[in-house]
Image 1: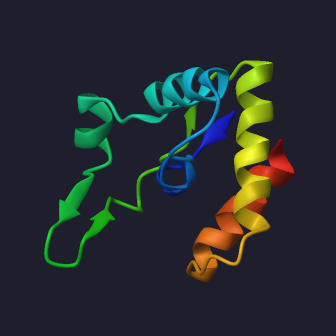
Image 2: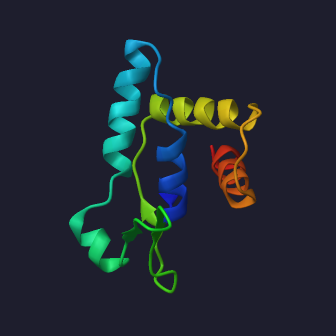
Image 3: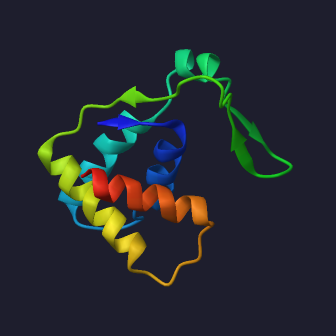
Length: 106
């Protein structure tokens, strides 16, 4: 699955804080796959601004990365998107759009 930097951040943000042991194992593997390598941090110039509490990166660089997900991980990710989309949580429009795009891709 090809994911952009924004999508990787949004998925990480939406990972549930609790669940079954199987869900924990899937979340752990998914988190590992979503992490940015040192090379990616340099390539995309990823930075965290403590004042604004936000991440930034070089948007002029193609940031799509192919991340191999198992069928179980894809199903779990779809459940995460469904849960987020069905809540009353408030997110910026770009987060909703990203979740919807990921869900539709799966």
